[in-house]
Amino acid sequence: MPIKITYLGHSAFQFQSKRHTLLIDPFLTGNPAAKVAADEIAADVILVTHGHEDHVGDTIKIAKRTGALVISNFEICGWLSRHGVKRTHGMNLGGSHTFEFGTVKQTIAHHGSVLPDGSCGGNPSGMVLTLDGVTIYHAGDTALFSDMQLIGETGLDVAILPIGDNFTMGPDDAVRAVQFLHPRRVIPCHFNTFAVIRQDPQPWADRIRRETDAEPIVLAPGESTTVER
Ligand code: NI
Ligand code: MN
Image (cartoon, rainbow, N blue to C red):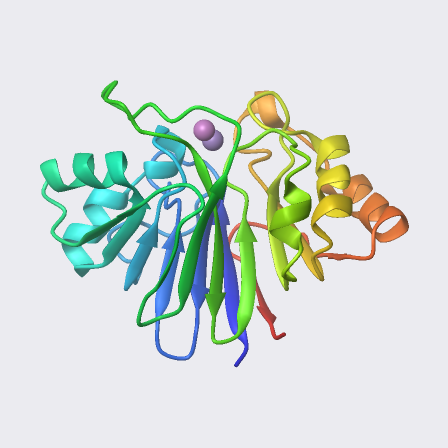
């Protein structure tokens, strides 16, 4: 089954499978790139890669309104529960779990994870999702790391990678990441939201075409793509 991937701006994406709608890192309120509001977006599941405000975003608000299951690390799930989120599922690095909608595996990310109020947000992560047979890797916020080769070993239909630099890997390291991961397609994120992470994704996409075997898919906020295996 094809999966519809919609870019919501920054690191936020919506994934629609045959029967489920998932959000990852739903930072909409206060996100200058967001094209959709937190009080209107649909979600059955919300994934949170780490504790930073530009990733936790509107998780509490959306989860309370929709009753969505929130999947994150154990510490962030505890914090969300204390803020009134009813359904959470805590995981940790290297762990995978099969849910009704598909499988989630938490992968390492080299970054920070403190929560907006200063609480401990555990370790930052990436996520490998398998939805209706389509495998999607969202790297979260991270530096380049050579163990991306292990993440790519099982075959990725899509990789979603930060290219903004300063807080995460920049365009050059994101090309190297694609060479490690060998995804069939790659979508850039975490750029142009703020001045300090301004990047032109087109020269990067040209390099992906020339220097890797992946197809770059550059989405503007609000745009979608449909991917099959
Ligand atoms: Ni971050
Ligand atoms: Mn971030």
